[in-house]
View 1 (cartoon, rainbow, N blue to C red):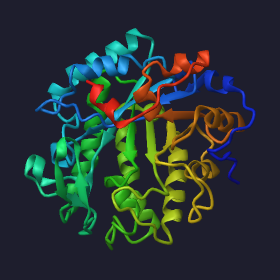
View 2 (cartoon, helix red, strand yellow):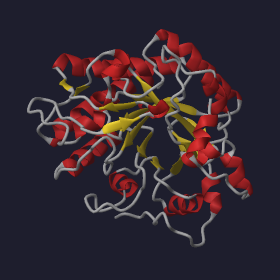
View 3 (spheres, rainbow, N blue to C red):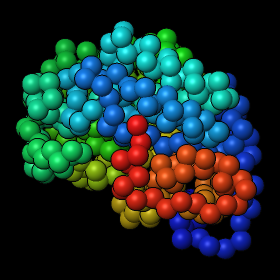
Length: 360
């Protein structure tokens, strides 16, 4: 049964729900507030994070947990301008500067590991994107800096390329550990490679990686296992968007069952958390619930809610047990001191796109 309270909830609530401690694996979080992974488009030419990332994350270290922007596990997966990577040994030191700064301020930080699959583009590294099947997203993508590119038809991944992608996820987690991250979050939402395997629209294979719920879930589960082998299950989170439409994700009957199987398997692996990846966490008829409600039905472990919640609605949902933690994106961009402002009941600065130009 979905216990989520609508985002528009304006009734009485106890804001103290946001400031209750929470045990997340081996981490004791001082509050329930999470920095959502927000793409910053600030990487250097070699896709190392900039020095500005140190200040950006350290300024928000009062959150219970920080999750970094999506971070590439291979250069061939680059699909957006100036997105950082964790695929080179030379990436470890600049990321370590970030984790050191966060830890000095008493914070905790997970690295979000990312393979875009068919969303990659030859504009960046000259490589044609790969995906489970040759299914084109015909959209024109508007990028920062005025760049406009049409998506490209992906090349169907071979068995060897699939296994290599799984290995790259594990290797990225090893480097994340070397850089001092407290854990990793697998980006299996928003139309990127793991979700491309999960959805029938983008996975039309008939081999061992598609054709049934178990086979469509196989890639994501093997990625999960590779990451758990690298850093331990208690330090691995998984982001899912069962109702997402980003990157032309289309729902097909049977997709719900694939997600249900995946969630059941994730529960057996005792992961750190699931994270609902959605723009607006509204009710979806195809799920019979909100995205977070759909996840909660089968997952009683730590659940991070996300999707346009106000602090009031987030506190109400946490108090009701709909989810345990709440990720804020836009509010955290506009208010680096969001936790302190919420605790003091201060007015929050509104988000607007121009704020992004001030981030380093």
